[in-house]
Structures are given as structure tokens and as C-alpha cells.
Length: 114
Image (cartoon, rainbow, N blue to C red; front, top):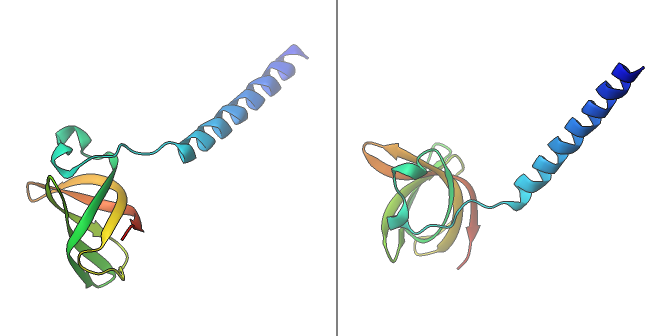
């Protein structure tokens, strides 16, 4: 009888713990960085960035962007064709990658600010 009770208690605690982690993940945000703050330690990590679109090119369901803030420029990519214009100010969340020796961001979320 005690073994069943402990098993049930363990299962309930595991479910509650999983739910807490899911809820917390919705309220945690990746760090907000400026372009010149992106380093090797950010590779494969999610970040938040605000920048101006210098160039945008849509091709075969992809969008390739060159973004700029007061500290530098960076390339970004999303697997959606975006309906945004050059000089728009956006906030993105994405994962830092390295392509041909340079940092780029694979965009997960994008919000138009201006």
C-alpha cells in the first residue's frame, strides 16, 4: 500500500514540476543585446534585438535581412516571407548562429515597432 502511495505522490510532484517549468518558460525572455554585444558565448542561444532593416529580400519562402543598430550590422534569416519595408524598426527574438565566419540570427519572432 505504501509503495502505491509513494508512486502516486511522485507522479503528482513530477506533473506539478513540469507544469511550473512550462509556465515559467512563457514568462522568461531571452537577453536583450545590441549587435556589438553578440559574442561566441551567445552561439546557439536565443537573444532579443531591436534594429532597423537596412535590406530585405524574400526568396522561396525565406526572408533575408540586414539589420542595423547604433553599434553595428548583422544578417538575419526567417523561414517566412515578410511583408516589411526597408528602414522599419523591428524587435526580433532568435538564435545566434555563425555562417561563413560571421554571426547571424535565425529569427523565431518578429515585431514591427515603427
